Length: 192
Image (cartoon, rainbow, N blue to C red; front, side, top):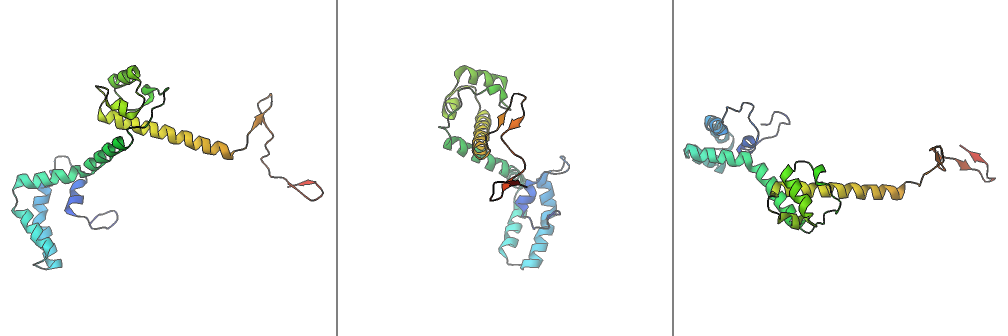
């Protein structure tokens, strides 16, 4: 059971969590606690239940198989994220890169990658993929950076449509914009 929210966790979910002590091996923890888990499930679900049989089969596996399963569970979230990144790159291969993009302002790019991107000035993510020395990680970073910049520009454009145009006088004060709403009565007299 999860101590934070009280939800029941599967063995795979437990193995995906980082250990407090790095010297503790998740597979060793699993093999130590699995007999107790098996007994508890057997008590709760009954001897013939499928989960009990699966746990018993897991107990019979070799230690290396348990370690492999533990490693696969631990890295599963990272593999899912990597698969999403690959799909994003495939989907947005045609995304155009701004001509004035300053690659040195894109975080996490190596000096070599910045140099190569500056030299080639790719027109799209797809073109950047074909530059030797530009890693998939750099492409994902570049894609996220361009998306963020585009989103920021779109937001500014939307905001500018709804904000009244402000004029400044020679002193730099804003004129023509009233911060206090003024209503007029039917005679044209202003009132607050």
